[in-house]
Image (cartoon, rainbow, N blue to C red; front, top):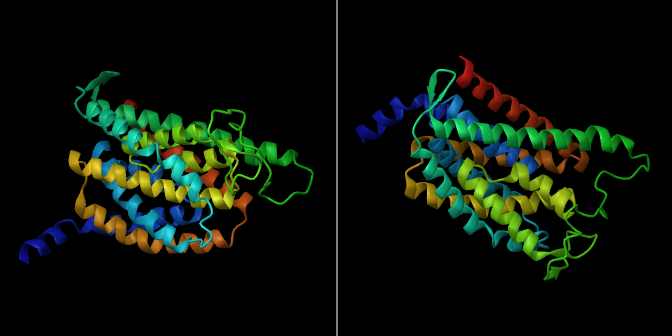
Length: 309
């Protein structure tokens, strides 16, 4: 008992910080069905001093807790979006294995010398991938929300339910009709490929992939925003469970911090769900864009500090 108390006392800062971070990113998960891991992983590296592999594994613990809580609060008796999530989920285990393999390879890389400084190769590469990924998503969301949408003078509501996904032209059989993709049948193999990519990102970067998945389901597949959020939560949860198992085996988890993150996430997702139910679809996409921009700025500043401090 004394050892437990001593452990809690010596890690009080991490525990308090973990609860606050878990609550904050839990709100994002409940509101957007995404956004938690993409911010939490670099925050754990920047604020808590964890290496990127351990930050990724610990972030996955919070992700599983937040997504499961969010799914509970968003439960839909009609099971809307489940078929899309199931088909995409078929690719997740294979992507997860590939992502963990890449992570373990990065951990074994020798230090890289940049501008006369010896830097951790894994941290440098992962932060660079984060910055590029976030910047591309932020640019697209900005174009869609503040340029393309401003040209819409038809007075439509914010969820253009009949919009076709950008990948709808790919007609690789079997073609499946989904209730939440109203425009047309969609290729099942394309959905599996999306799931494989999300599984890879989840394992490699410690994210559920929702920051990519939510825009992909809306823009590429053609799901309505509200249903894309629910489908994203389902896929993020499945990807998180597979990634969690693999990160635990690889020893990439700080368990004390993970428990505090999960505790905060439980309350944060409930708050985010309440906000999501009171927010229009177009506003959700706009606010999500601001979250991605903030995350990109955070990661780029961390990368700049590594290179030029």
